[in-house]
Length: 264
Image (cartoon, rainbow, N blue to C red; front, side, top):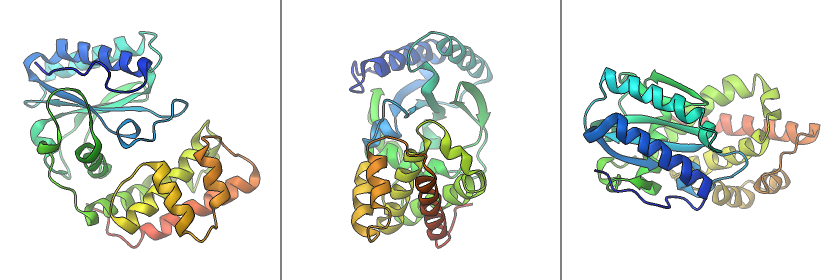
């Protein structure tokens, strides 16, 4: 049985919901459970208690059966209605060990959970980025280290995956519907995400948003320094000027993304 870390994160209420998820998943999967790990901001070091999600991946020894999928759906329904503070911020997926090794385009649909919804869907090319973060920074909630299960992700693969995210969600949704930047906490998130994408294009690596933001302030000729400094404080600036600057930064980053091949 996968050994659990009693304090996987520095946030007690996050740990409570993680322990609840692990307990439920153990009951649903039994010996098929290999381990539970955190990626995203909790792993890369830029978790924000006001806006971040709790990103997890649960690894199984074998493919997940239809019966197990039904049990996973039911457990997420229970946790969502548990009243736990972070229950509705869980976001993650369930994958067999073999699937972690490398990104598989056109793979079968996998169990996933996001924004209170349990569903089946294949991993998109952003899974390249998540595998990179898991290999570099994963936090173990339960189980052995995950790094040996994941092949190295090359700089070109990483750049291509980030370019794909930018040319998809950011170019097709945010730039065409900029009112989305008015959502609580989204404007600083957008600014820091662009800094991290630009850092990736330059260095072929993913680092925390604060580190990428400091690099951007030194490397982008000071053009967006005030905007970036404000974003680092995790305070949204939805003034007309700040929103115009944020949109300009997104356009600049999307344009940079066009230089890199997007994985198919």
